[in-house]
Image 1 (cartoon, one colour):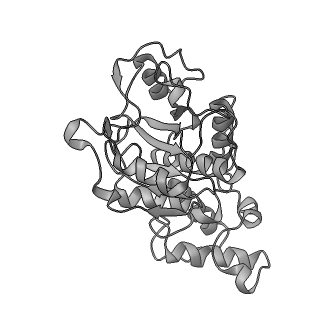
Image 2 (tube, rainbow, N blue to C red):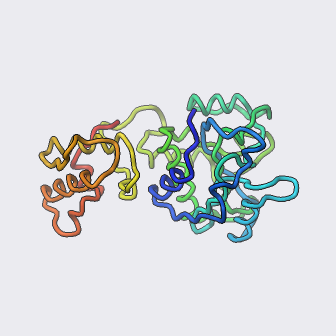
Image 3 (cartoon, rainbow, N blue to C red):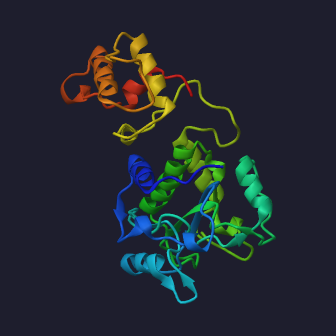
Length: 288
């Protein structure tokens, strides 16, 4: 279980994963908190909108409709991969679902039980992303949109320390639902696992931290990966810290990494202190 991310933290996490994010209207204060709990959160739920057109779909998810007020999710993922944030807090997206499924998500079980009950408030427990698609099995899922779903889910998993098993589809939560239709959640979880640097088949982790991506290293990032990186830089004689390495990415981390890049022979803009895959692999940051 986890405390929901603040609006700022949610935005940073998504952008750090390489996503283009648009803040729609008053999304930061737009929620259904007056109607029920928001948190603790246990996972991420993926939906399809059964609509077409970006602007109208975003407006619908922000406003809702006469029988279901908005927001209808936290973020809308467009065909081009852009994420539109439409709510922060409780949102009308998950509805009542199966308590056995929730327990499996909390335990990050290898398999999910059948969703044959509707007895648990999912709106309190899941972040929700609505993905623009007609949901007819024919409307295509562009590569950019699938990549954005992968990145958005991974961003929240990374922020909370969850694995890919904390990401489910609406069809795995609530009886009678079919969304998302057009790709399998199993295949999406495999993609998320790869992005997180985890082995989909089991709990085994690599000896060294996989490269988390250039976008990971931004102001506001706090992670044990940054600490482990700093310790390796010090061990390589590249530390430029006034105080020992810590979890917060800082100018000292960047200066230290630039020293490592120069030690490897990089010069100019290639030694700017922002980790790249090749130099990161050579640093051999222990898995944390």
